[in-house]
Image (tube, rainbow, N blue to C red; front, top):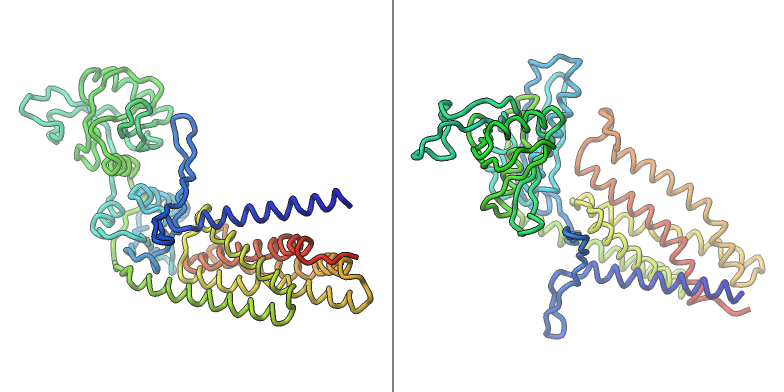
Length: 447
């Protein structure tokens, strides 16, 4: 019995510790309290020369954060039906790479078709320069590496005359990736390059031929950079350094990674969403969530008294853990996603209602309070499991994780499904595990 009590207390204090950690994570980055300014603790972790610093800010979708929405028409006339699926997937992947390197990690890129017509929609939350985004996304870039020869003193490294360029055979198809990164010794920004096996051999020959000269990198026949070759590189890995800041290093990486689009695309519609509309939606969503939480809490206390109050504590813990997961995963919150969270608040107490009603039945059958509590949790589990399994199946259909074409592909509906699924799993955890341990410590009656 002593060992069991110690285990229950250990679990109880672990729950309290996790709750306080979630409170800290969900604090604003900067806030005022009692006339003083406080900052959220820094959760960064140093791992050798690299630093792991999670972004704990909530991510909002286009409808809440504002931004740009672009719609492209895809030209599939020159691709056979057999090659079309892979070409479309390659197009989507390439556009996502361009958008992410543009700095919009919460973007939404979706393909849709009606008959033989295909369209590509791109949502860019937080983007203010829509023309720059259109230029980066829509260009059908061709990447090539050329040697600069006989460059006269008056010419610049951005010269485009073919008289000064010699083909090395190295193309964008040989480049695996380009990544902006800080130099581990100096801290200055640079761009690392990695080539495939064929590209490594061509790159070794190019660095041999143009040692102590310049190797120009061209995008659509325009030189974007022309770094000097200081050493012969045989392993297919190199870095471009210079007077880069974070923005220019990211821009160069985006250009290098762009490559060639497998299918031509044409912009047919663009729109800008103001952030003020998003702020109103967030405010209304928060108000609705608080009202829902208050009503559910009052219902539980009114029906179950002290048991309902403990269930409300479990509901608060549920909300804190949910918001923490939204920050850590991260989840991009859209307005339907907020609706999913509000809906899951009511569902989170369903488990407690089933358990408490079973406890009442056991008490009426003459069981002691402690036995009734344990039996209530045990015997209600099958009903809880079956009810939530049905909702999980529905959530997975809405989320469509395998991108089946006959199911939903909407980003908004998927956002609702994500928050709903997180709410279901956490609701089961808090309702059965957290609330049970809170009851064992705070409401257990001595026999």
